[in-house]
Image 1: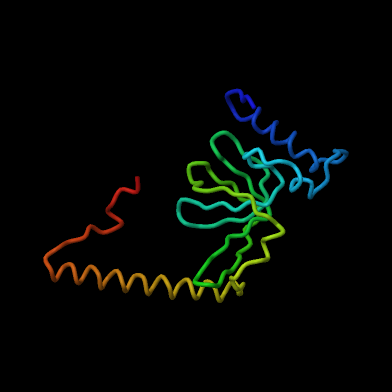
Image 2 (image 1 turned 90 degrees about the vertical axis):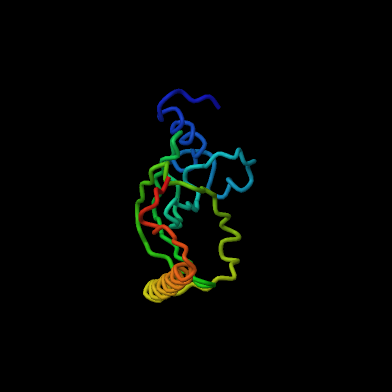
Length: 162
């Protein structure tokens, strides 16, 4: 695969490979499982995206370019707390490539085989809030213990993220 500078040639290649999405194409949905993997994301397949800020998105890949800029549709934000998870519907999502940590195709046959329990949005948000409060309290105790020993820890908001 040779790509010209810019995004058009890459997107055109994805469009050709995802031909079954277009009316009149020969390949049908589900044929993706039988074709050999090229290691390159295929538009139209369900993908998981892990973002730099820790969020997890799951949606159908519609576009990608050489900078890993993504367009996902029917996107949900999945929140994990312990052995529970909740999905928040987000719709169409445009992700700038510099924020992508991981992009992976989801095997639809194995997607339902998870030991995690799905809960409502309200319940998972409440559990996430409780977990974050416990983490903050733990951090405060750690800083307090270090201060008692004469050590100081720089605050996270004063550190450079890069």
